[in-house]
Length: 142
Image 1 (cartoon, one colour):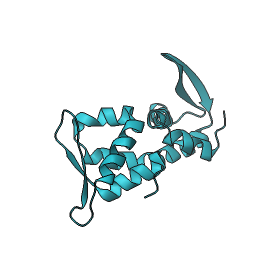
Image 2 (image 1 turned 30 degrees about the horizontal axis):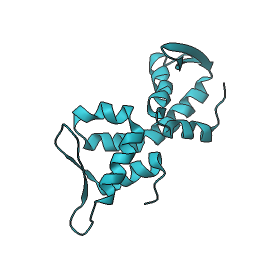
Image 3 (image 1 turned 120 degrees about the vertical axis):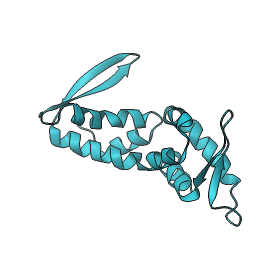
């Protein structure tokens, strides 16, 4: 199973890409010395399949996944722990929420974007972090 770098980047940016791309990192941590490395992916509802991949490919894929996850990790650092799971499981909705919050942002008066949560206190996130997240996962033109 060979994946082009661009196809992997698209996968990492997709709605479920954050979870799927972590599979490469998990596989390396489980089998730090093995070659080939067994990587497990979900192919259906509670149905998994193992793929045996050359170690150098898995290391390259894991590095790409780390690069692609950086904006999400930076955003998660700025949010309260109670909402982090929701953000990871609802990337598309988070993009919508950030776009709405970003549209209300006024750089003349603020340095942070305020994210309003229905059952939690608001979070203030630096505008650069919001823009990076939207650029990577929402295709937003900032």
